[in-house]
Image (cartoon, rainbow over the protein chains, first blue to last red):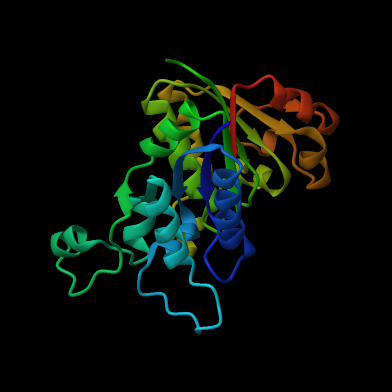
Length: 129
Length: 119
């Protein structure tokens, strides 16, 4: 089965962030395909490489990065949702004249059309709110 | 290719940004020429209220934003009958003309769609 994931939940305040990661890991282990993971609303916070949980807690950013590298996952952050919440990659930081950025590959910034594309081209779109 | 897409609005218009960001997805889908239906469910029916004065909390009124959807060829609006009744909302209170579906029919309605997403 070809899945896409829509992550609306923030990484540590809501369980949805962790559930999305676990679902993705289980999907791939079960031989399913993940077409895209789209981060929207508070879910975009999962993409910040500055997140620094305590060492005995799971780092969701690192886990997504590891999974993406192992399976060539397409991790897309919604640009409108990200910019207003202060999540920027290097080029957006330059464009808006900000002194810092907190987003880098494998997370990509793109528009909502990527969510529509994921919904159309997947058998199932699963939302984690 | 046109797909039959159902977008479910489940949250109240303010208090969280899901209603607004869900609407942004509706507009994106419309721009790509999809066959969109919108279902207002639970507290999502509050989005349909007329005369929202959200400027006082520095937010654009969700009701007025919904009113422009027919300009984007989105005309299929549904709301759950019991969810309107439980919140004492009458047809005259709503900014769009919606078809009501009873709660027991929602599951069958969702099954008729090709793609479904909820906010």
